[in-house]
Length: 370
Length: 263
Image (tube, rainbow over all chains, first blue to last red; front, side, top):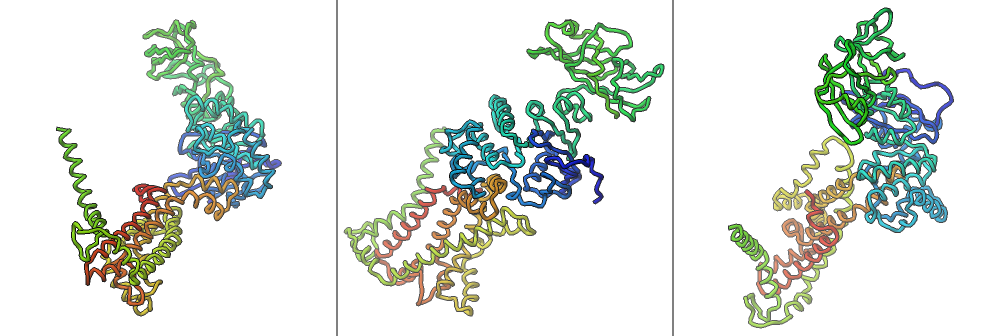
């Protein structure tokens, strides 16, 4: 196996560094393919992607429950890949919570401390502190089966943070909770993390969770890292078409790049897209090349029909409460979804079968070479 | 129409149960007989046959042997069956599926054939009419059950709890003792109890391997019935049923049979 050069900066070691981490069980492609990124101390990182993208595999390699085919996981400059799970000092919160049903809440939380031979008094103090951190201080003597899903979740977090782990690993922790509780726990988990300052890796397939909770999001697809950045980065400045379409809704217009009077111009089936083009026209998109133009539905504005500008017919109009969602069939045959504010001038234009010209700010458009 | 069917259905079930349990009921009644021969209904009532059985040296020796063997078989079935079940559920190795599917095979073989085979091996080895010989023979019958039951319990357990324990710092042995084993208790009780019952009631294999020096209770009863029939036989049958029933109740109370056997 040939090692690709590491894409990571060669400076002082960060708190945690994943370097070309690969897991290949012999399928058509590696489940995790040369994954590399750094995590700073105290950071809350989301590992986001569709199911089968390799995010859970990555988490299990972190925890030592799977051995990587190659690559490194460095904590404080030391590779932990060869260490068994019980020597890694990581806190893992399972999707199923995995509380020990034959132990009380207190015994569950104390489990890791007991194995570390912490004295009885210190155990009691630290367990009490951890339970206070998850607001379950009066539940110590209960059995896991007597707790609600959200409470079990918090016990699982207390059990993981009480050992003061190098990193807290959360595996889809919200997916077994009902919708209302999920919103509550989202803030609860972020709040606990902020107070304890424990570096956290949060695996989820839910872009909403990732956007609202994380300092940075690593978007994975088919075993590869597509982009890592702040929620604003990945939402507004998607690096790849996959990221653009996975996070939030997106319209993708197949367009063609050409030069008019020395200026780059994009056309979609012969109609001109709003000008000027964003500064970062894909490097390798020579004139005549096809380009995918991505615009979010909420960025689209409607104008009265204008010649040569990109125009179409409203073919669907749905009122969804906070907004009106319309679908426009462009004259070239491609369709666009737009989200309009009710009672806005745009919405007034958008009655069924109306002809409209669509417009957006150049900064709201992302271009990808295709 | 539906009503008629449901009445017929119920009558059918009652008939089946009667077919199974009436003989036992008759035996129970006869065990309290005052007669000196088997007759139903008895002409008088007494407990004299119970005291006869308790005073019979052959039967008491057989009871003692059977109890000791059943206990050892139960323990060994667990100690040998648990690692086998663990390997079959948790480890990857070539031939795993084959062994999983063949694990119940000894139960399909005619017991007569097994008994003959065991006798031919045990005679030169000097194991006939010894405790080790009988224990080994009974293990052939009980191990498949034990492994199967423990396998089911283990796979229902999943791996999350064990993985959680390991990430919290538990070494494999600590994980097994503190997490896996306590969660396995229902399967442990069920498999040991069933091994004990099977061993205690076993007769076909035992017949090949017992001798004048050492015989089990079922073999003693079998030999006695061969020569004579009096209410003492009924008393012995009641004793056997009572002991098996007691063990079954233990299992039912702790886990439930359906759950212990799984799919």
